Amino acid sequence: MNHNSYGELNKIGCPALVIGGGCDQIVGGDASRELADAIKSCGLCMYDNLGHAAYEEAKDFNTRILRFLLGQGQSEKCCGAVYKEV
Image (cartoon, rainbow, N blue to C red):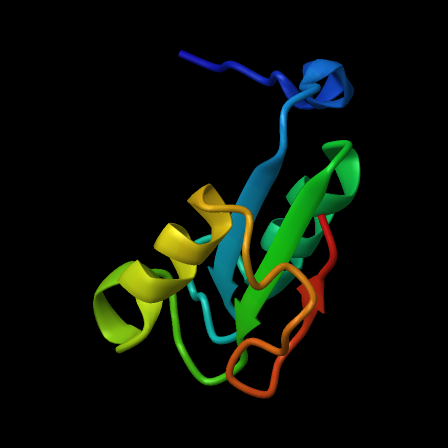
């Protein structure tokens, strides 16, 4: 089975947040950047030294999600990595 919805990502109109790991050995860190670039109003938080399971590895993951959902913290740095403003 193969499914590719990349061409549909630009239709997402609500704020979104992509969190990725720079050491992701499953899809690679560039995949997170590419995904965030394709979605309008999308923030990007890259943990440079984490992998595919950044959600389990990052100590501040839940705080980042909560801040995003509350509309706070969109312009701060994420672990010294890239955080693209929403």
